Length: 79
Image (tube, rainbow, N blue to C red; front, side, top):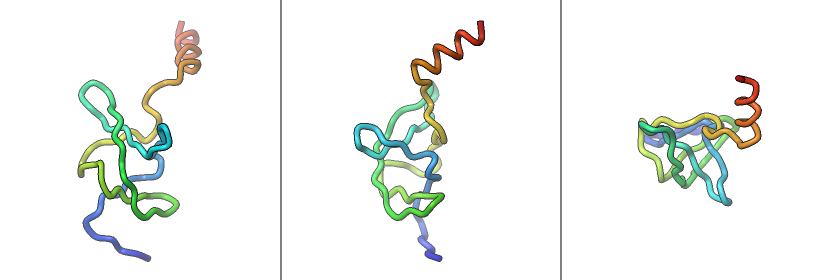
């Protein structure tokens, strides 16, 4: 088991691909913003973020923006 001190690590579920780049969605007062990150070592559950993220930033663990078709279906179901 590797022990890597003083690193930011995030769950794999918080990592997304956008235009071939690794990104996360950081929570803001008005929603989320996309931040590109540079990754280090990973295992099946977590990945080390070498740069692009600050400690204590809150991340989306699933895609935070509804896909157009899904949003349309949810709106119709609510009516």
